[in-house]
Length: 237
Image 1: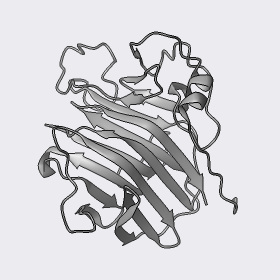
Image 2: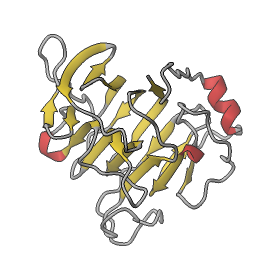
Image 3: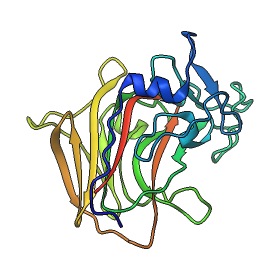
Image 4: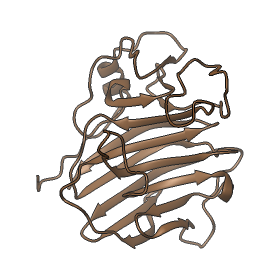
C-alpha cells in the first residue's frame, strides 16, 4: 500500500487534451460497449474520461469537459433511449458507472458537480468494495445519496450505520433548490472513520473500519435524473 499521497488536479485544458474532444457543442452519448473516440484512459486518480468507467446505461462527455452519468428516463419498458437497461430490472433505466480501476485504503474521493434529485429512484455517489462479479457491494463503504424517500435532502451512507440526512454548519438541511444541488463534495475514508465534506466544510463523521483484503471502486448510480461532474479526483493516502 502506498503511503505517499497521489493527488491529481484536473483542469479543463487537461480534460480536453486527454479526451481529444472536437468542436461540436453537443455532448456525445455512449454506452458501455461504444466508447467512440474516447479511448484514452485518464491517469490514476482522475476519472473524467468515458474510458475510465464501466458503464451500464448512459454516460456522455461534453466538449467543455463536463461528464454526465444518467438521463431523465426512469421507468422504461421499451428502452426508449436504447442504452440497454442492463443494470437490474430491464424495465427500468438505471444508469450506473463503476470505475474500471480499483483503489486502495486509506482513500479520499473529491468531486465537483451538479446532483439532480430523483423523483422515483435512488442516486448514489461514493466508495464501495468491489464484488465477486466485478461490480460492487452496494451495502459497503461510504457514499452520498439522494432518493425519492428523502426528497431533495442530501444524505450520507456508511456501512453498518445506515443513512444520515446532512446539514450544514448552521444546522440547515443540505437540499437541492430548483432541481439542483451544486458544490464540492468529499469523502475521506482513513483510520477508523469516514468523514464527509460539503463545500470545504466537514458535515458528518462516522466510524468505519476497513477490510484490507478488498479493492475499492468509485460507484455512481442514477435514475430519472442525471448527475454531472466537472471534476472527480481520487487520492490514495
